[in-house]
Image 1: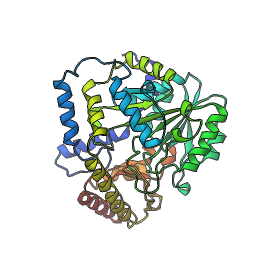
Image 2: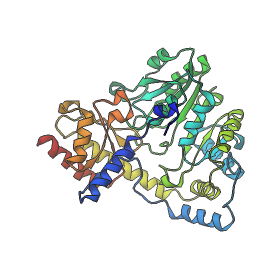
Image 3: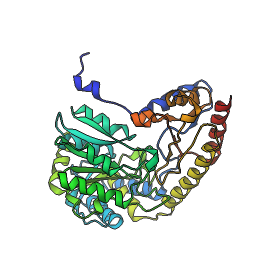
Image 4: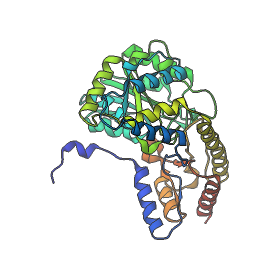
Length: 386
């Protein structure tokens, strides 16, 4: 079969490949501890499930507007205004089946062949994948351990050219767990405003913060019209399979993003949008308990990793990942990730799954029980000492 040339430029998520390999080993009777996939190991709160069921009974089962239900757009805008201090209204919200479509749609809408998109590296691999897919160049903005994996605004400024069309930010960050400080965002905002560059700020871990205070670049004066603020429900409310995300942006761009939705997904399932309203309106105790559990797990995982020979690990400020430096083991990070799975029965990812600047690191997800995390650390320790 002859495929379009652009398909050769489309990447993937290594986490799903490792998950599949782990599944094969489990089918052979192996005991595998899963630290590779970024998915909460909690169930969606019952009140959200019940709201979706009630919405289906109430008739929210047909097509809806491509940009989203008016009442959902209004409620999601209000959530952002309450948590970011912004002033979005419903016309500036587009709701999509998951957050990823916004990444795809924003790049399709703003970036031409030959343009450049500045992406954090290491970073979520879909940023680079979609950029290359449309024929543009993904320019790596290095995240370095000596800056606690926070983007360096001075280095970012040096990467800007007359072909730069988009800067992508992710805070709290996948895979490193770093979080941009307000002064970082203010400096990045000056670069964006001086060069009139749009910023896509990917913020699905905004409630998963353990140290410091979360800030969005959309809060910075003058940045609202230059920002696409991406949020979702997957992480905060354990709703990964519901496929519900949204973004806030200037109204004229929202119309174009909605047009792309019309041409692809048509719309987001109406009953899931109503469940999203319920998520925001309902009790937050279960979500807060999840966040507290992830913080406890982070502490256990970081402490355990720092006891392993040749391993050092910063304590991430947010998200549910840790990103240990494994160069001291003398083992290539790709080889070590493979051996952790094949020999130790612990599924992890090499930092290279997130870009060239991830070389020498592993990514481990703390979305597992403390008992399993401790067992995984013990297994990796035995591998390194063996």
